[in-house]
Image (cartoon, rainbow, N blue to C red; front, side, top):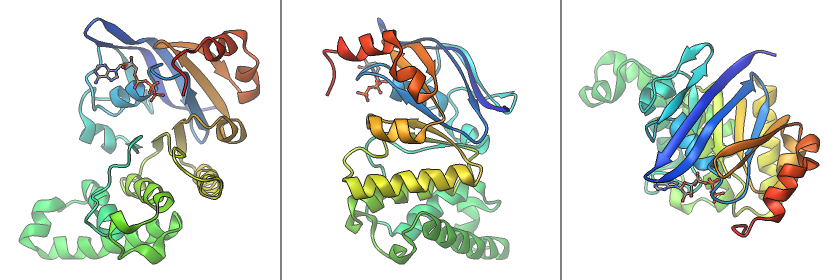
Length: 256
Ligand SMILES: Nc1ncnc2c1ncn2[C@@H]1O[C@H](COP(=O)(O)OP(=O)(O)OP(=O)(O)O)[C@@H](O)[C@H]1O
């Protein structure tokens, strides 16, 4: 097993609240790794410190053996970490294609400035970026909606578009924050198939999800957080029968 991402004793506080306490875990290259736990356990906070949205108060993330630059979202993306959000955050008035292209520009040489000045390199890159964005839309199953404005897409397709936008940054690790939230059974089945394709194509997936069936059916390994601490880790079956995990969920007065 090759470790892709390791968190070492990661800590995060919000004022007097200790949201993460010494969270250490290793995600293997090519696996789907689930992060579960009751409401308020610290799952999204873990994503936020991993991706640099929030500064870290202690510990570190190591990707491919290199420490990630804490608190620097763009540089962390350049290390191959991409994410989606619990609440969809698309450019609602841009087309699906434009949304994906926006995700891609972080990887292009000319960048936004080049596009504005319309240099030859920039125009050539723009063509390649467009082609690649169309490929990615096809890959996630919404190629036919390339010219549809994001807000007019169905809910399930908006979620797919979020994944497409994250994929445009060419991640090695894709962190999905509750991707099945609000989906109907058909959409969830489609999402599961897409994540299985991602794994088969070598993308490592870190998944926060409340849908237990999806977690159990999809994840290679799962870690459980409770009150900011990792209380269990293992295969879905191991974690499901762990007494500490059962207690955390049954004793959970914060549950949905
Ligand atoms: N920006 C913030 N400022 C203050 N407190 C925060 C902030 N973000 C999260 N918290 C607190 O940190 C704790 C962990 O929250 P977090 O959102 O990470 O939990 P979660 O496991 O993702 O929960 P859920 O399943 O409900 O999304 C909670 O007590 C929450 O209120």
